[in-house]
Amino acid sequence: MTGVAGNRLAGIELGGTKCVLVLGDGVTIVERVQLPTTTPAETLAGAVAVLRGWHDAAPLAAIGIASFGPIRVDPQAADYGQILATPKPGWAGADVLGAVRAALPCPVLVDTDVNGAALAEQAHGAGRGCGTLVYLTIGTGLGGGVLVEGQPVHGRMHPEIGHLRLRRAAGDTFAGSCPFHGDCIEGLIAGPALHARLPRPPGDLPADDPAWEPVAHDLAQLVASLMLSLSPQKIVIGGGVTGRQPHLLPRARALVPGLLAGYLGPLDEAAMADLVVPPLLGDDAGPTGALVLAARALAGENA
Image (tube, one colour):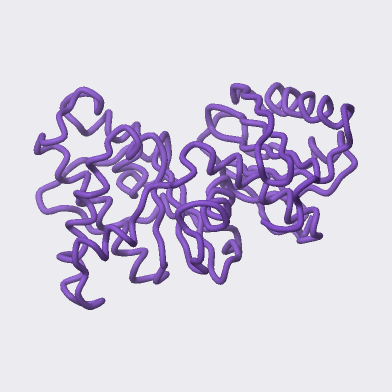
């Protein structure tokens, strides 16, 4: 991102299991601190202490918060920056933005962790040049960030792609593990679901085991649905599940043309490999996305 180099920016990637804080020269990470995500009070106090230390050393120009969701991302809402209903114990109603704003006198912008990662991959990674992009992370949960014409999609809330319910593979009777919806896509292919549905732990199951077939089918259904509904130029898929099981992406890509049955025209292996890709920034997509949000806050974008 141009025009921000030389500004001290800070970013918070607040995840379900860890909180990563980054100090940036613009959107280039120069320092990083990782804290466990425990209770809201403990986690936010720890994050604020790190930010204050950086700010005391030299003032921060802006802060970006890329948080797990659901979280209110409408700056006009009374509960902007607060966690909404979540299965993570104790976090519903946590005022993430309020804790940071109360401690530091600089612009702050909040969005989801996956929207932040989408912005980072669009600006610096696998989605360069793409106005319409979807970023998926598949790990403990399944989150999706959506950019249209380069802007994160917001509406009544923000996209909750992980809770889509899609067509199941024939004969697959796994009930799903989502506490809200059972067999939504998060409940089928996120980490806890794989531990529940596979005959062995995912890391112990060979890539050619037939038990992976319905998992690849479910991921392919998600990709096909995103192609039909959003027409993205790139679908970037990161997170621990596909990172540790790299065979899943090519298997899912191979199934998508059959699911679409020719509707979007010919889609050969090369076309699918160009459309559905791993993140170029790897684990830095989320923290870099938090710095991109800070840069947007500095520019006055709903800070």
